[in-house]
Image 1 (spheres, rainbow, N blue to C red):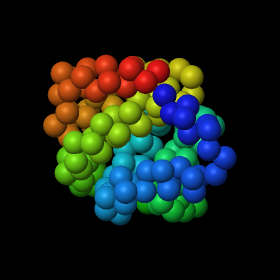
Image 2 (cartoon, rainbow, N blue to C red):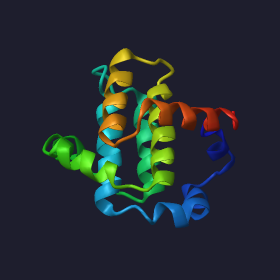
Image 3 (cartoon, helix red, strand yellow):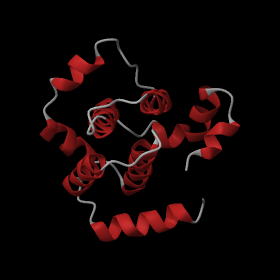
Length: 144
């Protein structure tokens, strides 16, 4: 899905490529994206090495620093605030977010029911309907 990222040797090249799009996220939105990805990845009670790598790459792309006490920080966050931040991102950002969620779910090579349930919960809280998800997935499949 994100195989085009493999073409780039440095994260700075990816940031330059996506710069206009990524800078439009506020710091609060970036944090909400990362919190939700973290929760989804941990739905099966395992933060697999490949999920950690994907999480770090996403944080790098968003230019959001990851701290050593991230787990503590994320556990103290009000999830309703996370949903509110995610609900307020633009339509193009929602498409990117959905693609990123799907990539996170597949990062460890196995799709767990718990991850799908959490992802669907986040997407519905953002106002993304199942029909919209299907439409976006069809678009994504065009590039695979």
